[in-house]
Length: 162
Image (cartoon, rainbow, N blue to C red; front, top):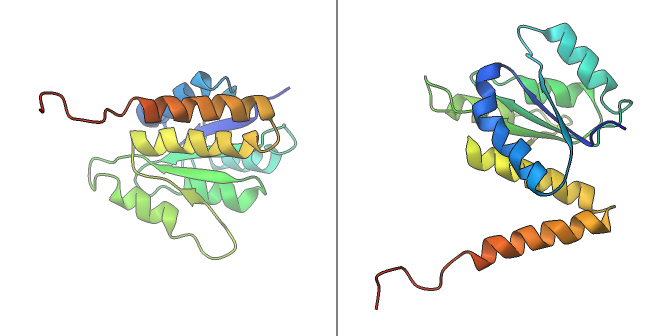
């Protein structure tokens, strides 16, 4: 069986951000497949992947992209699967360009858009896990435990205060 989640990115340099999604999924016990699928440099690869993703058994796609960031929107245009877009921070515009490209999809081609960078990658993984947990009680339990651990890690008072 194919992993339920595909993490796609436009280039190798996007992995520095997108690895946080993969690590979060691994912590939750969710398999994922990672691929470089550039909307601009490998459009045939993108079309083949997105058109065949559902038939391959994927349930959710997490797509990270920087700069023009067309990958999440193009993937969403080519599949019925939920696509969560992660804007990767760019050197020129700090990821704002990526955010605008992903968030401004036309009506009818939805992309769930997350925060720029690491936080967005982690939250994309958690959102994808939440979707899968709707039909997986064991995953729902693991996700609830993960969230509780996050809550419990927040101290009530700052260190060094009276």
